[in-house]
Length: 150
Image 1 (cartoon, rainbow, N blue to C red):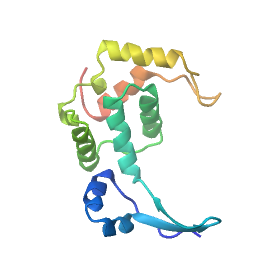
Image 2: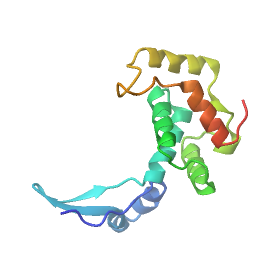
Image 3: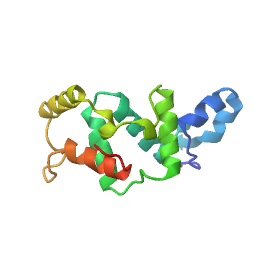
Image 4: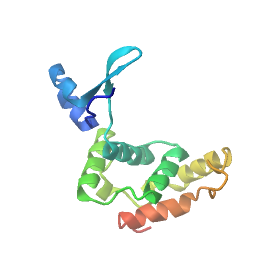
């Protein structure tokens, strides 16, 4: 039997870790074959913001693919609240906030080539019916979402 699920954000974790008794507020309790256990649950909005941070700071084509899939599924990326959360994530990584970033996730030609090489070394699709991932199309979509010019 699963208890009440409570969402937690990374931004809240630092505050909560300072007072361990507060941690329980953001766990949910489960009962199962192995007995009772507390589980962490990452807020969906927080997970999307973390994926945006990863696209700005990491070298994995998968982050860009995942963002495209989330956008196609209708997930929200434009609200001021979400953009502020992305700003917090980027600040944690010591990179400029979203409003100060250049278009296309700040991908310089060299980094873009490395991502393209990753794409060539992997299967083009997750499902046989899915089109190959279009990095340029994805970047254009997010530039439009965030009203950034090339």
